[in-house]
Amino acid sequence: MISDRNKKMLNKTLFYVLMLVLGLIFIFPLIVGFLFSIHTETELSQIPLKLFTPNPTLENYAKVFQSVPIFHYLKNTLIVCVIAIIAQVVISSLAAYGFVFFKFPLKGFLWTIILATMMVPGEVVVITNYVTIQNMGLVNTYPGLFLTSLISGTSIFMMRQYYMQLPKEFKEAAILDGCNDFQFLGRIAIPLSIPTISALAIYQFVHIYNAYFWPLLVTNKDKWRTIQVGISYLVTGDVEEYGKILAAAMVALLPTMLAFIFGQDYIIKGMVSGGIKG
Amino acid sequence: MFQSKKKDLIQRKRLRVSPLPYFFIAPALVLFGLFTIYPFIRTIILSFTLTNQYGNPTKFVGFKMWQRVLSKAEFWDTILTTLKVAGITLVGTFLMAMIFALLCAKPVRGGKVYQTMFALPMAIASSPAAAIFLFVFRQKNGLLNSVLGTSIAWLQNMNTAIWVVCFVTIWLHIGSSFIFLLVGFRNVPDELIESSVLDGANGWQRMWNVLLPVASPQIFFVLFLNINNAFKSFAQIKLLTQGGPVNSTTTLIYYIYKNAMINGRFETACIQAIFLFLMIFVITRIQFALEKKVVYYQ
Image: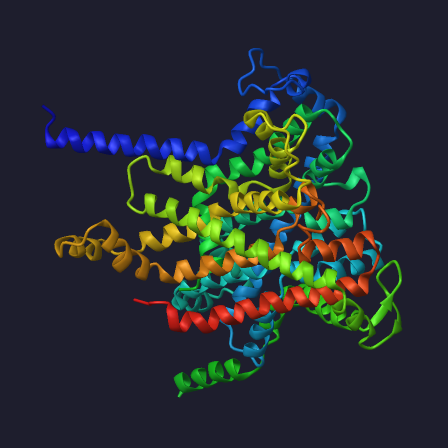
């Protein structure tokens, strides 16, 4: 006979297993992508397709690294990510600090302007921004790729929210001790906000690394493509080698997938503070 | 005496307008000005001009281009497609995210494993995702056709292409909705659930009377988030269907891209961009207006 306690345990285990199965079904596209990326091209052109190949191979990955400039794409993407993330951290920290710790004429008006810009989605101005970048002669350059990602409303909101909960006495005490604003910001406010900054950085990394529309517009040479755009040209290209495409896709999605798995608490923090204020 | 003098000095120091705060906020304002405010105004100006192939204005023509764009049936079809895609993805994403979030509402030891799986696609870029789904849905040697033993052109068929695009969009966006809803449900205080159990409420009653009302700000937010996401979905359309067949998956954002980058009609793209802005703006206004009436705040 099963005791009540054992029955409860059994139910719990069963629920857990079912949820795991549901989760696996949900991420099945990713599993499919991986499993077929280790097939040979011949196997991929034989119907019916088998989910598990009897002789898994990494030859598609080898082909990606040899014939696709994937490390170059990754390098471009990482340069853009690093510059944009550093800029977002610095510029949004400064702006948030200015709005939280100072009273000054036109403060309300300037804050309204920032709120108003958040009402304009990037997609609405993407074409005119492209014209601007083109007129500046910055198509196929790093500045062309990163200039529009140096600031975002989300970042300012996150930093502002952090500074607002920082006790005002901290600053008063620091000023009395002879700190000026830059010293307070550099030695106290920013070091204390490292968790918030990490959240912002990981959140923006996923965002900027995954960007597709903008880098598609401002690059037309292979040398300048980011990883997302590079992958997309494999897909739309006239290729029969789908194993190679799947392998390249797996490489492309790995960095943000890992960033999410290990940094999800930070990413969620970023999402929630950027999204809902309540 | 000395004390009050010092106080006076501090007071005066406070009253004097310091340039410092402007220095702090200037970089952000300059960047917003250059890449949001300026292009927004320029978009409006360009919509009243003719442009050359570089997108620079050549001639002021008033509302002529507006008339031309708005009188095209293709344009209104695009708006309709955009709303259709938004509607389908909204329903699909919301229902799935809701089911996942309700199943995860009660924290379970080790539950983070499957929660991570439900949220994971939000970190997956749309272009590698499109590559995988193209392999699944393509006609020749596609996975789905192989499993079903069929030879259906899922992406070239008017009736199926839009559903594939929506399916991919839903899959990409369930994660973020799931997280927002989960945060909402986890916010429900334990005492509230315990007291409802003591009052004899069953699972359904608890969901309707406790979980959903308390999480209503998040639920509400997620509904509008998904409409917005659908309006902005681009890569999956560009890579899976290129807006086809016969424009059946051409949403406003893809139409804007096509007009500007493929046809070189920047003024047309600008008018459509203004429409995209207006659609998102109206939705956001409705959201704010309804939020006050519908949402239950503790």
